[in-house]
Every structure is written in C-alpha cells, then in structure tokens.
Length: 119
Length: 109
Image 1 (cartoon, each protein chain N blue to C red):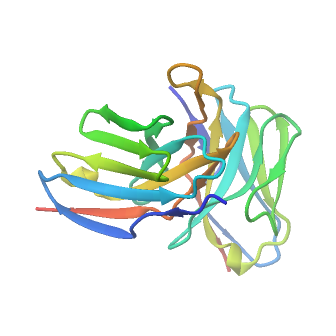
Image 2: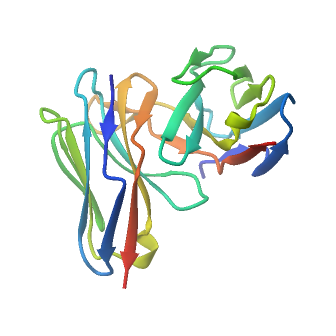
C-alpha cells in the first residue's frame, strides 16, 4: 500500500527558530513535493524535487529551503520561522504512470500533513 | 499560466446529484485531476482526465473538454460522507500540479 509519512502532525515553534519538516515515501517515487495549504488560498507549491539532490522552486519558495539526500526522503527547512509561516504543510510524491495509451499521469500521493504554528 | 477557478462552496441533499465545475487556462495543459479532502486530512485521488469526455468510476464521474478549458466532477447518490473539499488540479508542465482553491461540498439530510 502506498505510504507517505511526515515527521509530525502538529508542531509549535517560536519566531526565529530553525524548523525541519521531514517527509518519507516508500513507493520508490522520483518526484517529491512540499505544499502549504491556507484557507481561501488552496494548495500552493513551495519546492519540488524530481531526483536525489535535485530541487526546483515552486510558486512560493521564499523563506524556505529543501534537502533531498536520499530518494525516499524530502526535507523542508524554515531557516528562521516567522508567524506568516503558520500553516498546514503537505508533502506528496509521484511517479509517472500510464493512463491508457501513451499518456502519462503524475498522480500525487499525499502525507497526512503537519500543522505548524509559529508564535 | 494555469489559473484554475472552481466555486468556493456548494450544498446538496443526501441522495441527490451534484456537479462541481472547474475551469482552467488551456495553455500548456497536460491533464486534469480531481482530489477529495476531508477536514484535517490529506487529499486523496479521485480521477484523472487527459482526453475529452466522461470517465465514470462508481458514484463519481469526471468530464473534460480541452478546447473549452473545462472540467466537472459529478457525484451521484450523495452520502453524508461525501461532505468534503474537492480540489481540481492540472498538470501544466511535467511533474507539477497546479491546484484550485477547492470547492467545499456540504451534504445535508
């Protein structure tokens, strides 16, 4: 069964702290993603990675960095947490799959999320 | 760009049929996903359309018109457990998905 796990369901940190959010997938997927989800704004992509040691900026990378040293693990780092980074953080992974004929899809499997509060 | 529009909220009655619409910009389009997300939980995959037409899967169906930049999710025989947020997302380029803000569906007795 497909599984994406995240290190914490709930996290409370202080402004200025360095925060690590860990994500592990057991599906041997090439692609991994970090999103944040806020009311009225939906899911927004922070960073993604399509291979070990590779990373690409998403739509809102400012204030975040990522690390992918192993295929199964993708870490999101908040170098100096701020109150506007209070949010639900969701990790996802994907790998190309066929959907009839020659078409490929990139269905993403999500972890349970980490609700981060920065005070 | 891949701007996606879907209604913010919908309400429907148990046992009824509801259609949730999604429109998107067609440039660079490569496929359309629907996800379901219950409150406090992760999104889960419902459907994927890459060709025009209707894809049926049990009580849920999804339709795509690429020329119109339009999709809908059809839920039949609504149940209380279908109360959730429904997210439309498209693959504009390669591995990434761009999500809409979601439609919060409330199923009432």
